[in-house]
Length: 208
Image (cartoon, rainbow, N blue to C red; front, top):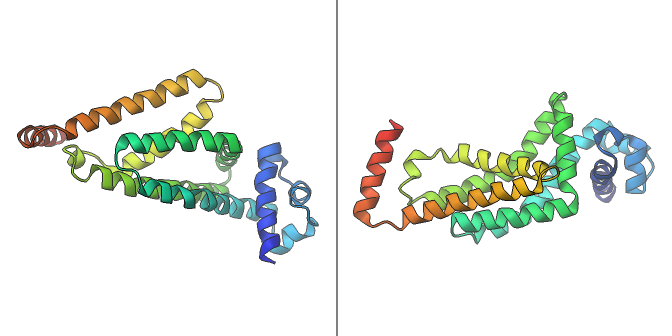
């Protein structure tokens, strides 16, 4: 029973990957899963509910190994390097196409929007935890909204994955710019204690 549900979820993702969300009919999903299309309705009630479940379940499967890799990151530069590798992996797997289709479909579908938002937050949460850890002792820590930064980073990588399809050079330039910002933070972190206190005080005054 559980195996059939998983086959349907995998079939839904594969159908979106090949035909887009508009082509994700019960018949197409069942064909991709190798099961009778009646099982779509037996297990999920509707194709729509299957797509919602597939959105979250497929993301959970991708995030799980990412969390383990993220635990070994010790600097912002390493975090961005991991993001670059993940970016390549997701594009090669065809997951960029799936994400683009789900985001497009969610614009006019509140239920799918909630499922897509939940899936995106599965990525955001571990990124936010890593940023809290990496910025904890930085002079810029008091000035940074880590929760907002995690969402900006995640949204940036989503946007870059889609942007790369039309402007690969521009996407690489954007990633290179992020690398330079990470180096700047590292330079700030290497300042001596007096300079760090002075910088922290100046940043606090600027933030106020």
